Image 1 (tube, rainbow, N blue to C red):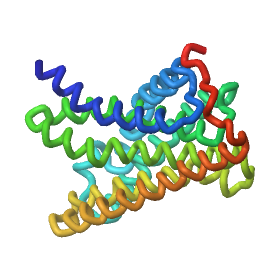
Image 2: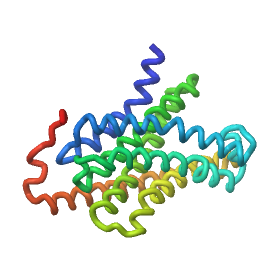
Image 3: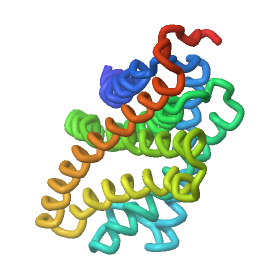
Length: 251
């Protein structure tokens, strides 16, 4: 019974955010492609974890991120170099594999949808691992991660998908191309670094936690505006009948 409870707590916030991003799509993507994106996101956990382990071994000689977050510099290094760059890099690879020959990638909002499915596939497995790794306090860990970590991965996915579509459909400038990866790395690294300040001392940890909450609120408002802007672009491009005819979920 405890295993079902852990899985439910770990996966429910992921499912809710997937449903949120899916329901906002006026022309929903085929279920087979969305499941493929989710599965690719799951697959990114293994290579990202391997690269993170190698980086930690090179930088610190072993241990884990928490054990090595003993200074502000360590927190920044771990947040950006150890966690954000490998994780967002592999997510982008997965997103590119999904979209490169995808005939259904024909709307601005599609980039956000697929990127969020990839990112939340990663978040789902990561959440399960975290809860099983803290099985004596999985209720508390699950609650905190449901409010912060899982929505964080959702937001990183929105940023990646927004700039992917912006580059693909609107303006193929170097700025938009680089922001496909840089924007989620900056958001992810900032989020992780603020939380990792708890490894330095309690005072900085408290400040970092409050700052992280403020940052998350701003980030999610920013993401909502990016979502609305792409949906507005699609409505402007496809006209007033946009969304009246649905793509078949069985295609």
